[in-house]
Image (cartoon, rainbow, N blue to C red; front, side, top):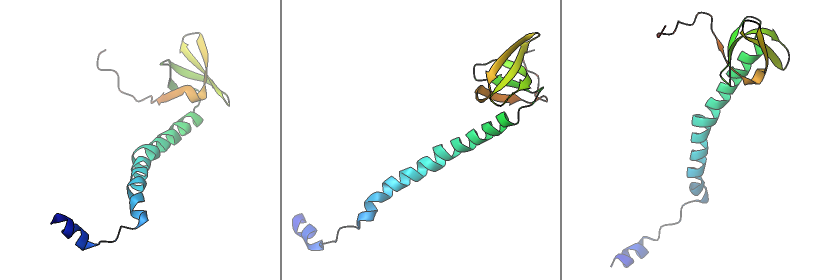
Length: 107
């Protein structure tokens, strides 16, 4: 009986582009949730690194905190302690610490 009902409907198959909708939807979700924010974050980091100047306090990707004493095209010289200077590749600088940052709560 059910076989007869299914055969009687005779519905046409859906268009081929309907089968691509889930794939296109997943691509859009990845774009807006993962790729686009990552591109914004990368652009902001590049602007920070391009704006480095003498006297800025920075944190490198390795965790070193230092004050910028000299900036070249590809390198930045950091003073991590009195009299101790280190050259760092500019792209490895993770963040620029603002001079108005609050003191740590555990001091």
